[in-house]
Image (cartoon, rainbow, N blue to C red; front, side):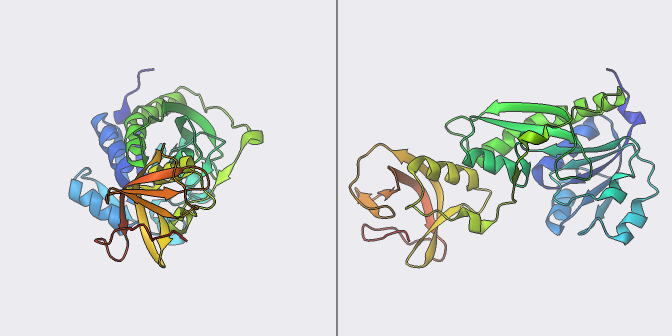
Length: 299
């Protein structure tokens, strides 16, 4: 369907690289973007530094408060587009755009509703990463599915490369979603029988107890939480050790789960509940120069 994006008005709610990529793409496609909303000072600084938008930028920590609602309630806009935005829009705001609110969600729906869907898909050992655009309603990720895409998780993928691949797919998915709605297609309802909710992960969720985790699980956790995230971690002598990169070892090491085995001074292995992992990159949180030794043990 051919549409003239210059005749379509939108307000973008963005955060992080995904938000900037969508903003730049829709600008290039000549979508009429009247305002960009950001919810954190970090995103405001990032947007200003990159000079991706010359129009009005609004910084609002709580978009559901009355002052913000009064500020945008009279907007004559067709769409709100949410790209990486971390706040939940309530009914009064969702009623403002004439044609709806499109949200970019980094997970398969309805199986991966909620927070941190890209991280969870890696942790759970999925073979493919799914991403979705939805026509947002009052529920959390419950709206009609407008478009879905996927890609295989390769052996060398981690959360950074997965974000990059997802961000390369999202722009055209947004454009396709707009075309669908303009053509009268409101998307497909989700199957509630398949619905699962996942919580937004925090640093405490990154703790690895090697007595409970097998080697494959440790590596998946490491890949899912490595840079730009704080990284998974274990504890040695009451100090956090950030596990930046690891791989499953094929060596048969005789030791108890949590114990560190050191070979050739620079090859570090940790025994898991099943198998072991080789630490390719790690750091102690308080003393980055400190190294593991054969007497160390992860609590």
